[in-house]
Each structure stands twice: as C-alpha cells, then as structure tokens.
Amino acid sequence: MAEVLYNQNIDEEVLKNKKVAVVGYGSQGHAHAQNLKESGFDVVVGLRPGKSWDKAEQDGVEVKRVADAVKESDVVMVLLPDEYQPSVYEEEIKPNLDAGNALVFAHGFNVHFNQVVPPEDVDVFLVAPKGPGHLVRRTFEEGAGVPALYGVYQDYTGQAEKLAQAYAKGIGAGRAGVLQTSFQEETETDLFGEQAVLCGGLTSLVKAGFETLTEAGYQPEVAYFECMHELKLIVDLMYEGGLEGMRHSISDTAQWGDFVSGPRVVNEDTKARMKDVLTDIQTGAFAKGWILENQVNRPQFNAINVKENQHQIEQVGKELRELMPFVKEQAKSKKEKEVV
Ligand code: NDP
Ligand code: MG
Ligand code: MG
Image (cartoon, rainbow, N blue to C red; front, side, top):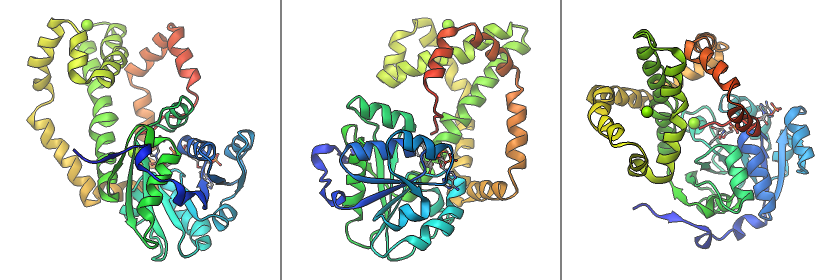
C-alpha cells in the first residue's frame, strides 16, 4: 500500500517562518486561508476588490491585491478558477515571485498542460484536497480533515517536499491522510474521475435511466425518485461501508438485480469508451479543447448548459424538491459550491 502520512509524521516547522499568500477566496481559498491561520501560520489573502474581498475581511483575514500579497510572501497558493489562472499568473503573480519562493496549486492542470510555466528558481508543488472546499473548512472546525494529495514538480530549494507536507498539515489534511502523487497523476486521475464516473458518467447514467422509464410510459415523478432522488441514500451507504456495506442495506432482490443487470448496462464496451476518455486526457486533447473553448468565450459550454437545464428530469426535479422542504433546507445550509 502507498505510504499515507498523518500529523505525527509531518514536521510543520519548515512553513512556520514563512508568509503564505492564498490567492483567491472561493471554495478552496476560504478554507485554506482560515485553516492555515488557525494552525498558526502567517497568511495573507490575495484578491481583487469585490465579493470575495468583503467576505475575507468579514472573516477577519488579512486581504491585499494579488500583486501585493505575492510580493510580501514566500509561499503562493493559487486558488483561482483554473481557467483564469494563466492570465492572473502572468500579470500579477510571476512578476512578484522571488528566487526561492514556492508556487503552489491545488490541481495540476495548468502546470501539467503548460498554461503556467514557472520560472526555474522557485519550488513548484501541489496540495490537492480530495474534497470540496466547504468540507475542507467544516471538517477542520470539527477537529477532523479532508485527505489530500501532494506532489512536487520542481524542487529548487531542496525543501519542496517538506513544505508541501507542512502545508497539507496546516489545512487539516494530516488528520485524514496525506498521500504523495505527481502533477501528471493528480491531473489525469482528477479529470478522468470527474468525466467518466463522478460527474459525466453519473449524470449520463441518471438521464438514461430516467428516459428509459418515461419513454416506456411511466410517470416522470416516479422515474425521478427512482433514478435521481434515491441515489444520495445509496451513495451515502457506499461512502460509509463500500459496496459491501451498501449491499448489506438493500434487499436481496435489489442485490441480485445489481449482480445480474449492472454488468449488462456498464460492460466491456463502456470500459473501452472510458479508456478512450482517458486517452484524450493523457494526450492533452481534452485540455486543448477546453482551453480553446475558453478562448472563444465558451459557445459550446453555454449551449450545452442551456439544453441540459431544460431536460425533463430537471423540470420534474425542481417541482418535487419544492415539496420536500428538508431537501431545500440542506441545500440552503450549504451555500457554497462543491466542486470535484
Ligand atoms: P472558486 O471558483 O471557488 O474561486 C474563485 C475565487 O477566485 C474567488 O475568490 C474569486 O474572487 C477569485 N478570482 C477569480 N478571478 C480573479 C482575478 N482575476 N483576480 C483575483 N481573484 C480572482 O475556485 P475553486 O476554489 O473551486 O478552485 C480553486 C482551485 O482549487 C482550482 O485549481 C481547482 O481545480 C482546485 N480544486 C478545487 C476544489 C473544490 O472543491 N472547489 C477541489 C480540489 C481542487 P471574486 O469574488 O473577486 O470573483
Ligand atoms: Mg427500490
Ligand atoms: Mg477537478
């Protein structure tokens, strides 16, 4: 098994005498800044004036313009949306990096696919929490944490690995497990997971099930409950006890259906297409498409988004969730966006 580090294996001293700039105060940014601060590190948040700036001030964190925050810091964690990182990096971060500083990311995309090309005289590493930002913050407050991957791309000072581990400990990941990776592995597995399983695979599976039932004449409301609503209950069981734990809670009839019908739906053909998806990620074809899509102002992204939101499962779902006040309450209490 890969080596998993916990708090007792990590020495955070190497980060104690350094100033950390957390650039961005969104899903990940607010969690990193506050967790690091409460872990005793010297933190400044880098932003432009606006909504996030006001929130960071309300939370009692020191805030400065990106360029100023970077200038006075030794470690710069870039927590902007991936699409905007290259331009902010060129204009505000790069000109203010000093030799021996550390440039840090929570996802390897821009460095791995050459959208950010760091200078040779800085450390470059990633610390990628394996969970949404609001959980990085909430679990920390509860005394727990979200596991994280760390990986070194460039070790100029000879301390990059130690710094990465200390940073992971500072955001609370050492309470849950810290695992070594590379920029390539983190980027490719993250993209594959969200495309083939967590987001793309799942939404397509749910829609196909819903359409199969409604096209056969069943009520859309019933189809919604079967193919979307119940999913959360099943996933919670898998999260807690794996496939066996989930299967322990369902009826034997459901378990038999799982065994005989699941592999008819997701089979060797599906796996072959998953391999195609992985190949597009590995060759950079996916990254190139997404980078170009952003350069032309996202025509395809926006068109598909409108069409997806008009799907019958979304219309029915909206009406049914209105009638389930507890679902709305849960959604309200999680104001922040959750991203994988
Ligand atoms: P968000 O979209 O939540 O963060 C946006 C933040 O960036 C806001 O504070 C926004 O401020 C600021 N921002 C945007 N543009 C600029 C700009 N030009 N100048 C200054 N500030 C700007 O990002 P995430 O937290 O989702 O993602 C950050 C990184 O973490 C990404 O690399 C992502 O892949 C990675 N990651 C994210 C996870 C998640 O849970 N979300 C999970 C693991 C990794 P303003 O209010 O001014 O717009
Ligand atoms: Mg049932
Ligand atoms: Mg991702």
